[in-house]
Length: 424
Image (spheres, rainbow, N blue to C red):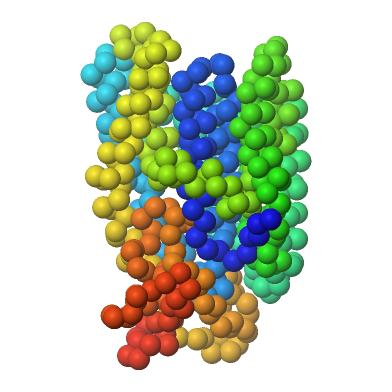
């Protein structure tokens, strides 16, 4: 059996990202033969994002008493925006080189992508070369709103972990009911692309994070985790075979399939296949692969769609482009994220704590980090080598850190002074 407790490094999460993005690529390359693999892969990303972001926010709140929202948004921007801008700049050049006629109508799609509203554009039937950016828009809107909503929930529940979990569970239930209702009553485009109908997958991850924090550990048997992995990967292939006279039956049956990613996330550390170096490498560059794969696979040179073999070659080129983007562009920029890492602050006076992501009138001691921050709960490049994480000291000279080394909070080290970064 495996258990999920406090946030810690989970190598399998990189493998899970790699698996999810490969599912999306296979869906795009195979056209209609594995069409539902794409939605399943995107849903895995949503669940994982909800879980990781909520875990990081709650861990920062537990450690420091509050969350620096400005630092959070700065880190999100540095991770996501540069690679997106690169794609937006290079895509028109690529279309011009292959004489793709869509070049003449690309400007609106570029703007909706940069403004992170591509989901609403696609939901209302307007598609562009960058239509796949709808999922990035959904996630970015979630990143903007969820920390604020989570802070409000914590303030109203006075930080009671069980009550927080119940409130988030209620939100998840409402989102699930609406998702099923949308499938039955609303158009396909709105059901598939809109943020409200996809909220259930993000809130699945949020609920997992709050439940883990409340319960301390959640046991997931290996057969359950392995079964969830099989369901998520194989069921979409079976459901794709359902006749297309009506899209609703297959979409309804996909709901329990994608929700199977919940035990998959909690039990990922038990599945050694997800720690495969190749899968983990794809997880490392998964953002770039997602950005580039549809741009290249959907190319229409001189107005002609690519053949099956050409789509396969385009997918390989997308992987090369993603690797180049990561090693030459994204990773160097991510070094700037250290400027927005939280540093330990002096304890607030009792009764002076601000509402939001802090218990009113109560300051909890900062728990010791269980180990080095690394791939899993953060994107690649989030943590510096040998750096235990926000607010913890780098290894002391002459001391070789080990997996059970207890990092010393900066606030407890001689000569420490707060950097004075504002939090709220």
